[in-house]
Amino acid sequence: MLRFSCAAASLRDPYESVNTLVGSEEAVFCDGSECGFTVFSEDGELELLRPHWHMAVKGTVPDAGPRLYPIWADEP
Image 1 (cartoon, helix red, strand yellow):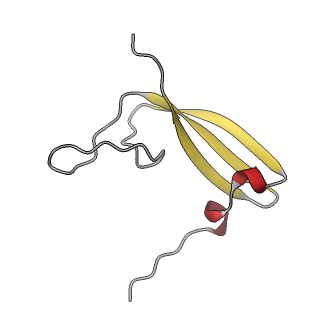
Image 2 (cartoon, rainbow, N blue to C red; image 1 turned 90 degrees about the vertical axis):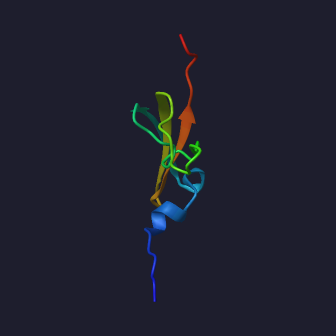
């Protein structure tokens, strides 16, 4: 039997915590699997996205998240 497990904090909504923390991180080599914005090639593989940032949202009391959202910049 195959079992999956994950931390309870990853299932909770960070916006329902007493403290909500918001930060950003650079995402140069992101394929979208972390932030939920995926692009597949013709052969079904995930492609690297153009460089962007992730907005990371975490909650404390109780611990929740993190949730990552892509932040796109204008191309030069």
